[in-house]
Length: 355
Image: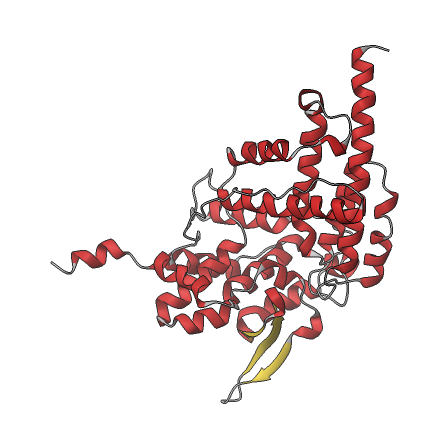
């Protein structure tokens, strides 16, 4: 047997052993994690039951993505374990690892160090937490004795101001979304999602998890009707959001009556498509729209969370009420909301007025 063939055999054995550990970890976590946000429990049970049957990491990755797509957001960060799997298999020769039990804490730390060269410290800290939990599971449930503590590894948290649109740009975007005549059904869907986030500050996941029954029409003290929605956000924290009927009803009916919605989307949910495996056209739609309007540079990218930040900044700028802003965003701590105060105030210009 050649050296190359021998290494391929070693890699196959290591990959199989590592995959078994990951499969059992995914199986365990998907059973004990909260199911409150899962849209289709029967579909969840069908997919979850296949975890221990997979034969390769890509198949397991597909299952993770499907579970995430139906509402099990808490497993999103497990991609880190898959990333470490590929790293370990690729470098098993140089690391001199023929089986998983030979992995040392120093080698794991070297992986985290390599990640720190490309990612900010908060991301590397997440890598540390997820991998630490995974190896503790292997110790307790799979008979390993890694005892990886990853001690003396601390990462300074960068205080990054949230990216948001200025008030003028934010209003230009909203006006464009309201007045543009979109022909494609996907564009109609994406328009409604962007408007709902922009006008309420809802998280993207909160919008995507909406059931049609969540949209209630109520009247204000003057008898004027509006949409009221009860949202269950992070940490099961509940809050109410509201939309003027004239702001979304036209686009809501447009989406609900279009052919795409009727053919491919779950009737119970506003945007849930059980056949959509992790794809997200809405972010691409947002970036394209912002570039068409010259609201961002051609090479600049943006995410849906930027609209939530823009909403928060707009609300605070116009009310100077941080408690109101906190409640609208559903933040548990006002410290989380304070960053919008710093993001929207030009302190250097204020100093100019002191002299």
